[in-house]
Length: 57
Image 1: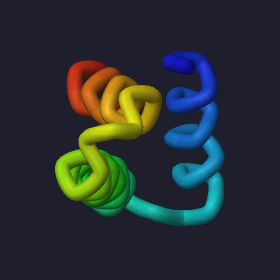
Image 2: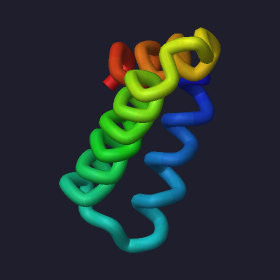
Image 3: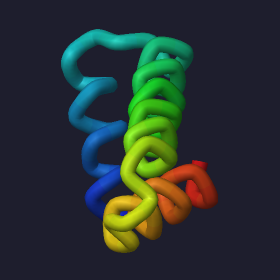
């Protein structure tokens, strides 16, 4: 999972995004995933993925 995320960062950098923009996108994605997990607590897999991404960031 971490390798995929690093690849995403590198891909975004090649597209001309600044490191700040890439970081903002990653944090927004993590926040969205956490909010979705909060709204649907029965789905443990989504909750675990959201927590893992948040932890990595």
